[in-house]
Length: 441
Image (tube, rainbow, N blue to C red):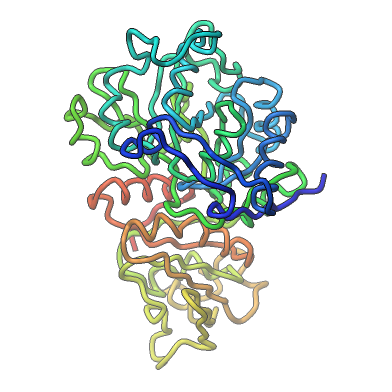
């Protein structure tokens, strides 16, 4: 199967018309799509695929790239699981383009002739969510809602749960796609299952090329981590997954003052209530070590002595120069391009430091397994994630993928302080799920 990249500049597809400009996308709106132009033609092609095919379409949101299909057709949803090789009990998030579309989903009779959202005597959206929707939609917040009976959603969307997650993305391209398709779109991240989430169309192509036909290329995502998932159907409300909306922001909304954390950073063993809870996620092929503390060659020598290539993902305090061999003035073979750098370390020096930290035993007795067949040097490939939580969130999946493509054997990631807020908590949640090991250096 050939996979097409369809570039779309949202500013060239036509014009958005809002019935109430103050309510923006929360009110009634429409899209006057251009009759000519490549961007509009590419958008129409993606919409037609969503409406008529059982193959999913990859598209950008503000968080990460999603892999979307008509949430009302089970055959189309099965295509998502097949392309991602995703476990069938891992529920999907539904994406809508308007509150009226969500209300029609919750109350299917609104789709009957002569019925409209104005005929609702009681809003089917639970009142606990009204303040959140007013403040955070469109945006990176997913809310759990009761599954209507009968449900227009395909059974494969919910993973046999009695609830479903839904959000309204803030990406205008995503909203235009959903609006023109005229159906709610179920969409997990557009990566192969367990791999780092994609933040560019190239990431999607690397994982899913040959498995899907269309990738809408709208440029890089701005947030970089998936949406926050909350459940307001229980008391107190809970956060099921940290993301782009922080607990502090949630607590400023009426009814959410006592919201609690309902997730852990490990792998759940029970039926997941939200995506990203049960299975290992966000992992590159390389071994990932999440490290707290100061970087030094002695601290990591035992981990890297048998490696050919080592990756460093740095945030605030780590420096390449922290790995200078004792007694040497500079890093050997150092080069830098943009946010990335490269240099080499003497394997003998690394083994010597490893030995000294293990009681000074002979080199041969303490030589790490496999090191005797390695080259004389260890190549280090280093990348800066950023110094604030938002930058780290935006860059971490991309850097993990870049280091993986460079075929590093092991990646050390510098932890950040999650006490800074939910942006930092979301980053650390994803990194803990990606890491094979957490260490203090």
